[in-house]
Amino acid sequence: MSEIAMRRTGLALTGFVSLFLIMDLTMKLLLLPQVTETMASLGWPTDAGTTRMLGLLQLAGLLLYLWPRTSVLGAVVLTGYLGGAIATHTRIGSPLFSHVLFGVYLGLFVWGGLWFRSPRLRGIFPLNSGD
Image 1 (cartoon, helix red, strand yellow):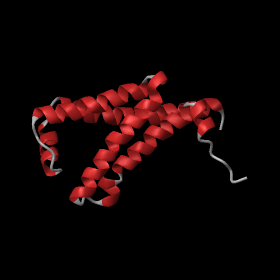
Image 2: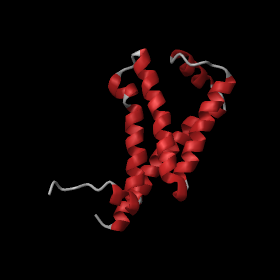
Image 3: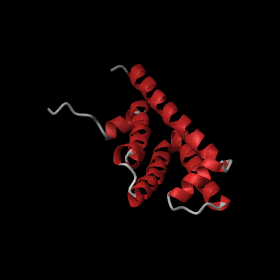
């Protein structure tokens, strides 16, 4: 795959996951009723402070991820955030493929987008053909 195609693939994956995270964190920051209901069903406090704190943590991770100089740090922060979501869904017994692993899917998009758009990261984590 050419470098241009790799970069475009990385930008597409980054764009997709970023749009999803922007939608999710905006819903948290606006304290939409659906968010409060979901927080309660997951066993999280439903107060505005907790909900907004989660939205701001998500925003901080996303901004770090989108800034080229801090993109790896942002990917690590987002991975930790998504790990919390995975743990929460595991704790309450959510369905595996649609809920528990959704954080894994998003994490793969985060790291995949970064890997495709960063030659330096591909140098650290190459995909070998098995030779």
